[in-house]
Length: 176
Image (cartoon, rainbow, N blue to C red; front, side, top):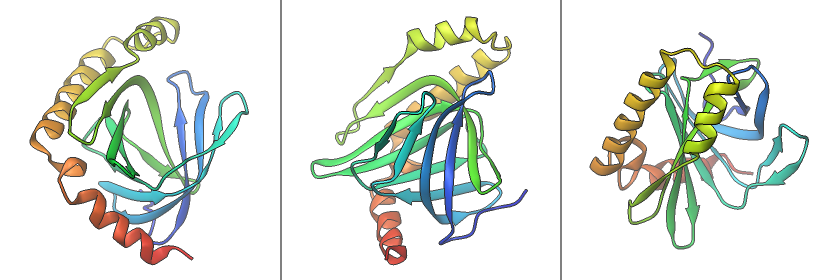
């Protein structure tokens, strides 16, 4: 598998299970890229929704993709602390200058005090039926939701106390 190189600017493409594009982040700077793990960062990047609407992110964010897990994590750096948005998703692929994954609707929002809330359970159930998710997908996603919750509770991986700060410092070295 081709891997993105540190300093390289790439896009992030989120798809739905039916193959349709869900969302595109226009520019993310790679901080670490291996076949196993990609860490990137962006700040005020253009995001295009599937219906063509666009918006710009409001704060710096560190993006974490690991091939071992069916989720990815975005740590958003705000004045009152780091908020995390965790997408339950397929493992990523890197092709055509973009990180690509399938978004499976379920999300966890984590607050600076490490409390969290599970989001979009209704959307998941609707899409599971509409897009005819294979039966094997549900147990995989639920197991990975468990891994994600463990990482949050144990403050491991992207939830470790200095993870976001350290990667943000590296991101600042690449900024113009």
